[in-house]
Image (cartoon, rainbow, N blue to C red; front, side, top):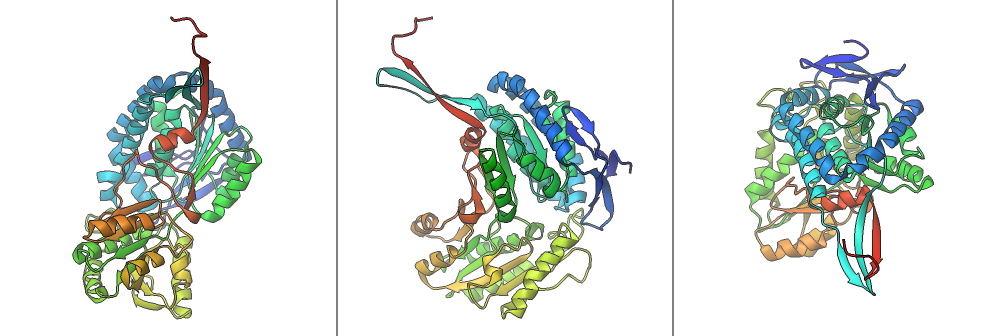
Length: 488
């Protein structure tokens, strides 16, 4: 390992920023630890105000040329980037597994390839866009998308590569230039993404990477007067600080801010399918914002559901995420393990019933047992706050109205899962539950053209499809008086 590069899973990864097409080091560095065994993977450049300013200036200088390419010109670059991601799935998956500890097979089979689909989908969507056109009051009218300018994208430590492509793809397709700040706990696959943008021929400054903490690099980026859009995924607390900084410069801001999703199981549901789906919420050690962490089960079938759920969880295997038999990986960082454990200990002290798990796993490391808690009250902290770990709660309800009331009883509103065989109930409850995305008898099925975001403290704004392309654009109405221009 050197200060400029690290060897991770046999892959050489730059540990420096990418600014204006060049790798730029910082005097200060931070240690990036592997969740698998705690070893130091890399010593990563820690950016601050100087690096943030240089990156935004580089993005501003590159903006005019990138915008002038138009959607078709940008399409060529982004399709090439998608091809390069497909060609490098194994390398990207190996590095992200070491850095974040997501299951290697999941990364290989679906997660990394989703990055390539993101760039293809948004580039093609932008190129196929038809301007809205109409006539009124003696004028011909069109709505024109104009690229907004340099965009700051701040991504979380879970699924860092995929989520970075999910945000940067529409920004680049819309004609914005980008400064990406990945989370300091898992920055390495994003560094590889930066290399691929250079290989794909994106002009210098179109894609920039600044690494470091949120307090230093992140704060400097979101407060920079040269930034015209900000997109963030993380906690509501951080989003409030970003929102204040964005307001100072009147910069549009979108945030996906976590969830406390309900998983509703009605008496008519396929209980085997519902129990299997509920056990799936422990995947990636529960570090998934969309997870249905509040199991809400019709009291008539709760015993039958619990029997099936326990069997499904008993089949889970905690272990090395590089091994094929592993189904539950370790938590990301010692600090996060402490946080998850703190939630469970406070729940125990306050009278909530721990019905399974509730302690660090005997295998050691950063593993925490899959935990199920029956809260003493719906007001319990364990019900009302996001844990972001392998911790679910179980509550019962009577009747459809009771299930909906419990589902809507937190400040969050990112996602929900409904299990029922009734099409009429699926429609009624699906419309009544307050969540940005609601699945019926499914989970984690995503259509890239659909809006994505949260209600309540789960988010502000929407990503996905034209919703994302509009966010990264300034929309202009162009009106031309009929008969006032000669025919070409």
